[in-house]
Amino acid sequence: MKKIIFKSLIFLSLIIYHVFFVVTLVFGQDSVKDGKTEYITVIFPLEDLRPTEETKGMGIEIADTLTSVLSKKSGYKVVERQMLSKIIEELNLNASGVIDPDSAVKAGKLLGANALIMGSFLKFMDQVKINIRLVETETGAILKTASIKGRFNDILDLEEKLVNTIASSDK
Image (tube, rainbow, N blue to C red; front, top):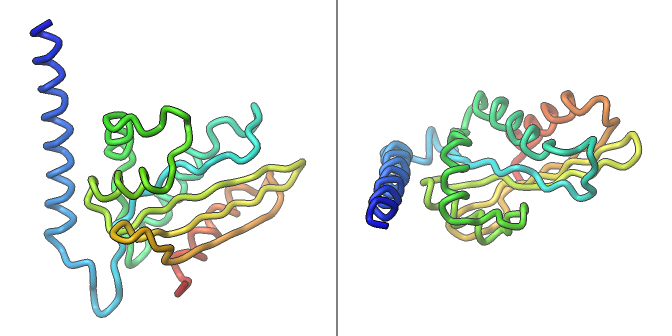
């Protein structure tokens, strides 16, 4: 029993250390650069509004693409998804498979982010629609939104266009 408690404490200490490491990296830099807001962003897996075998895992894949493309954009720094996974697991946030906005904001704050991206997608026949929103972690206010729809076979192009839309939009 003591070994289990000891191992749990070590694991929890490592998680806390990693969170403080990320927070130190993030808050050690200004979030305003050249008069433009810099978003330190956590990207959550997108919710599948009509899950099927064909769309299984797509929410994570879309979030991965958003992470890869957005991290190259000026004004955005993206927190590594492995850190997000550890926080979600530790806080036991995704027991239902869907993370509610309040829990997402809480996880984003723990990771030192000033913004998070969450959203959903819906595949219907050969069409897909993806919606995302950039949410401020401090207030929960929606800062920007983006939506795209097209053929399901064009999903990779649609994801990239979606990132370009959110990265370039004012609101």
